[in-house]
Image 1 (cartoon, rainbow, N blue to C red):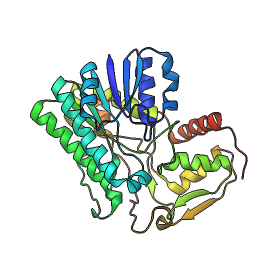
Image 2 (tube, rainbow, N blue to C red):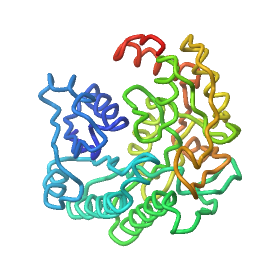
Image 3 (cartoon, one colour):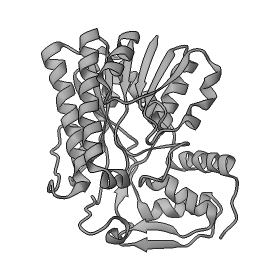
Image 4 (tube, one colour):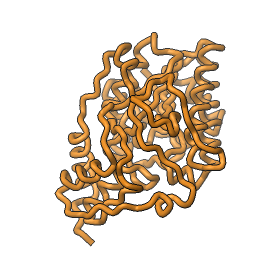
Amino acid sequence: MRALITGGAGFIGSHLADRLVAQGATVWALDDLSTGTRANVAHLDRTPRFRLVEGSVLDPALVDNLVAQCDVVYHLAAAVGVRRILAEPRRSIEVNLHGTEHVLAAAARHGRPVLVASTSEVYGKNAGGPLREDDDAIVGSTRTTRWLYAITKAADECLALAYARETGLPVVVVRLFNTIGPRQTGAYGMVVPRLVDQALRGAPLTVYGDGQQTRCFTYVDDALAAMQALMATPAARGDVFNVGQPREVTIERLATLIRELAGSDSPIAYIPYEQAYGAGFEDMRRRVPDISKLQRLTGFVPRVPLEEALRRIIEHAKSVHGQRPAP
C-alpha cells in the first residue's frame, strides 16, 4: 500500500507514519513544518519506504501529484492549538478550508479513499454528553476568534460529506477527542505536554480557570487503531465517527496525576483564562465522547488508560530532554 499523510511530520501524523511503515506501506508525508518537525520523522529516513515532502496543502498542484501516486490518503494537516488559532486566525482559516478542499478534490479526481481528521471542537459549547455524532453544535460569536477552529472544521466535514454524496468519494470523517502522546508539544496550547514540561522542570503547573472543566484524553496508539479500523470498513464511508477515550477527568486532577507520576513537587497555580489567552476567551466545561457508533461498526475499544499514557509521555520527555533540575 502507498499512503499519503498530510501533516505527516506532526504529532499524530508522525505516529501514523511509523505505524504504516511498520505494516509494510510506502508513505509520503506532506508537511509545511509550521508545527510539525523533521525530528518527528528523522528516524524514518533509514527506510526507502518513507519520504518527507516539505510543502503545503495550500498548493493544489503538489497535492494532486502526491494523491495520484498513492492508494489511500490520511488528511491530518490543519492549523492546530488554541494559541496558534488566536495568533494566526486568517492563516488558520485558509489552511483548514482550502487545504481540505484541495485534498478532497484530488482524491475525487483520482478515486482515492480518504480519511479527514476533524475534532471534538465542532461540538463547541455543548456541555451535554456523552456527545453523539448527531448532537447539536453550540458555538459562540464569529467575533470570538476561539470559535473559528470549530467552524472551519465543521465546514471541512460538510465538504467531505458533500463529496461522498455527489461523487461517491470513499471518505471517512473522524472527530478526535484530545489525542495525547510522545512528540506532542505544549507550544500551541496543548495541556498535557505543557503540564509534563512544567512538572519535570519543577515549575508551577498552570491550570486555567478553576480546574473543574473536564476532558477525555486518548492515547495516540488508540486513536490510530480506530482510524485504521474505520478505513478498513466499507460501511464507514460517507460517515462521521467520534474517536476517543470516554473516561472523564478534571484538569485539576490531570495536573495532580502528572505531578505524582513525574515525582515532582511542583505547586499547582490557577490562572484566569483572561490572563492566559486575553479578554473574551471562551471555553467549555465538559467534553465527553460517545463512541458506541465506532464500537458497533469496528469493535474498537481504547486499550491505554490515562495513567499509562501519562507514564509513557513523561518517560519520553525525560529521554529527550533529561530530568531537568528545578529552577
